[in-house]
Amino acid sequence: MATCPPYPTHVHRHTHWWQRAWVRYGALITLLALSGLVILALVREQTGTQGFLVGLGLAVLPVPLLIAAFRWLDRVDPGPWRNLLFCFAWGACAAALIAIVANSFATRWIATATADPASADTLGATVIAPVVEESAKAAAVLLVFLFRRRDFTGIVDGVVVAGVTATGFAFTENILYLGTAFGTDQLTGDSGIASVTAATFFVRVVMSPFAHPLFTVLTGIGFGIAALSTGRHRLRRALLPLAGLLLAMGMHALWNGSAAFGEYGFFAVYAAFMVPSFGLLTWLVIWTRQRELGTVRAELPAYVMAGWLTPAEPYALGSMRARRIARQYARRHAGKEGARAVARYEACATSVAFLRRRGRRGRAGADFAVRERALLDALWHLRDLARPALEHAARATAPPPVPVPVPPWAYPYGGTHGAYGAYGLRAAPGPHAPQVPYATQAPHYPYVPPYQPYAPPGPHRP
Picture 1 (cartoon, one colour):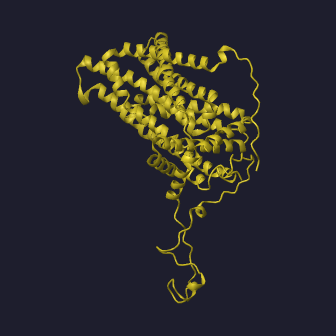
Picture 2 (picture 1 turned 90 degrees about the vertical axis):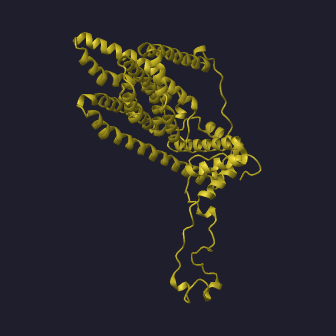
């Protein structure tokens, strides 16, 4: 077994002030804060203070549900919260500000050039708005893809990043639409179910809270597939995100133009395109997540052979149900700290599996050894709390033993206690049949590791 190679020597180089991390973070936070203040002022100007508060209270309702849904999809290898916070803030502040300014300018320019305000509004909604809004939202996905490449490893990451960005954008847009509708009701005196506010709330919050996330998720899938491509396919890596962006713009334009298809055009587009697309993308993401679990089960046995993991852990870490049971077990016996330690252990083990898969495919990068060592050290420090919980979860979720059929000639006199029973023949299946140990139930994973994992430290090193 290969031993741990020494850490590479880092050469300290002089960096300019604008290359420092705190400068970049400060500039980004300042940009988002200024965008938030400007968008707040613009929305409040259009809706009024009362309309803004009403719109804010109604628009916030679907946000926790959508964030929880995307976080649930990302449970196999959860990304850091700072990425999601950036994406939501970009969608709610920067992307919304770009959309409001660009859409207003383009619509006014078209109305002035054509002297037809009605046609300008229709053209702005069906052509200008999809291009501007999807491009503004895609900018957040591109930034995470470029500057947080380690956290962007596949389709699920692209879906989560794009979906959270679109959720923030829809949140701000819903404030504007609901606040404007409330102001209209204040002028006309309408209230209750027959009001414009109720109709807007039903269409945007009840029927289609997933509309904007659905559009932008197509862009995220393009970036996710590009993340899975090797460095040799540079053209594919450039074209796939662009193809996803174009699909997002097309679906967005179809959705915005549904009102021009007649009285029932909106419901026709909703039933014929939106709902099937939502179901198909949901299936795709869940199927991809199951493949990720399969990657965990296939890659981690190499670390079992090296002594980093116990034989039961690859099975437990490759099952979402077993992971949940392990966290619950740790919470009962070690409190919240134990549950957090198990969750951290699961995340590190999953990251190791994905890193190893990228290494086998030639996409791990030159820092593979350093990153692998850091993740394995984290696993080693958390093993005392995590291993008992994962072994308990593996036993609780292990498949039942498969009964072995016994030929009739084994019991010529009938029953399970015939004359041949004393000679050690297998007993017939029944409630008192001996149970197969858990270790023999785990599937066999033939493995020829291209990289030799580090042997764990300490007296238990093989």
